[in-house]
Image (cartoon, rainbow, N blue to C red; front, side):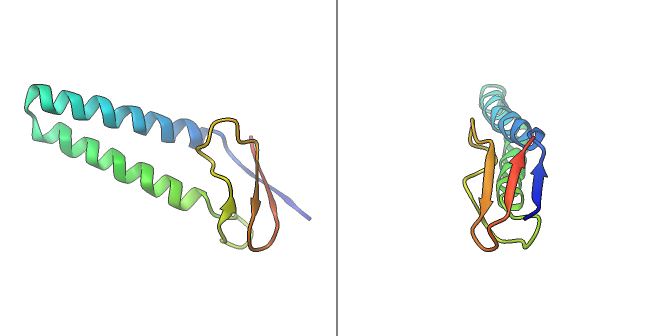
Length: 88
């Protein structure tokens, strides 16, 4: 069975987006700027997209066991086809 690889940078990007949400939301409330709050909402939507799209098997498109954003996760397995997906 072929092994597929997903970059660990997606995990880094997810956690950076989560950190940006907090910073933008706090700055938006403190500075009373709606633009910053909207940017935080955009960051939230981007992180949801990342989790939804990158937790798919590259072989068949099915959902995988585990999550690419969970710290310490090194390998994922597709529920549908059984393909192994390494995080490198």
